[in-house]
Image 1 (cartoon, rainbow over the protein chains, first blue to last red):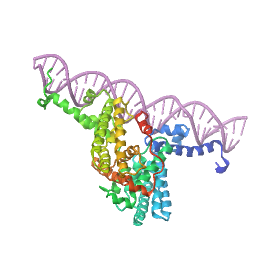
Image 2: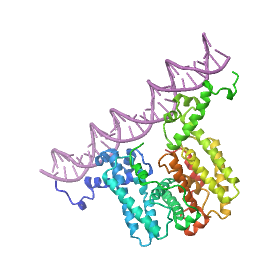
Image 3: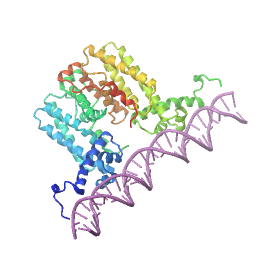
Image 4: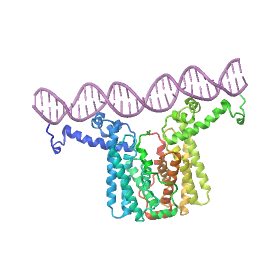
Length: 216
Length: 216
DNA sequence: AATGCAGCGGAACGTTCCGTTCCGTTCCGG
DNA sequence: CCGGAACGGAACGGAACGTTCCGCTGCATT
């Protein structure tokens, strides 16, 4: 039972298993982002493996979704931390939004939330994400770049809108989302507030958090 | 078999049937707008009738959806015609978008499209709707109110984004949609284009029309 | 070379869900 | 008083899906 060095098993049964690990996660990502309640067989087909290769790694569909969502949350935090390092507040803000939208992190987190019972780790990362959003937005607002009547809970709603753009293949979807993110950004600039104030108010954190509870 | 005057049968079996007609359509509207692939039993429950009351009026679920979508298209055209009559081009444009979003016409048309085989009447009304959109947008652009790098196929994408806002009850959804429509409008104003041009290009009419074909 | 078993593909199973049909009942209209 | 229109809801048939299970393959160890 001597564990062989990873570099020594580039082929063979172990190596295929290791490759399947990645292939299954990548396939699951693609499939569930495109169709949040796709059957688990679609993931297996997209990964080019059988169903049992899935169940060897994840005890249930729910566990797979939970893992996927965890990955998405970690990605969200990483993007936020990178954007916080950008010197110019507006540039950092833009890079933040672009990063979230390009990676389609929203489809991996909120869309999947409610389809599994979240762990404390999920909640913890979600709070980190909210804190990052807060900081990046407020910095841009204090610099006078983003209009003041925007709250940090407005941003998830913008992600949600952009995530709803699902026209054509993946490449076209990304292109279209960039286009409409540009439009959102034009509306978010502080000078744009001269066209009139926003009616109503942003959702509360509690209302946003309610989406993590199972419902359907 | 003398058909009695409608005003004479405010109660009785015939009257209940007439009332059910409206109740069923209203319930179907509410239910399917909230959940595009809700079971037909949910509509019956929301209308307070049995399932057979539904099947007496519509031979299948598909027929009910087709009728609902037809209503939505007619509503779209009516809103567009009203907006065209507004003297100020920008005001008309705004009223148009507000009307579509408030009535949630998008959920009744595009969301339902693809779930039934469309009739020539559907296609005809859809073309009228596209023509109206074209006219209202171009008028606002020629008046210098809306930025020039917007095409008429951008507007359905904006509806789609706003229709994706589904947080809380119907009242809160409407309030939130108004808020984010305001944000979109700020980005659409011609002066907002000074913040930078839009990347990519709008979808083509053909790409938008593809959503009417069954897929899932 | 023999052998044990990790890993796998996919058929099979049980369950849930949903559209549609059908039957017994009610009660208006003539 | 009776025929039948309208209705409520149980029953049916089939599709879809998550999960389990079985038989096979081929590497690793002896």
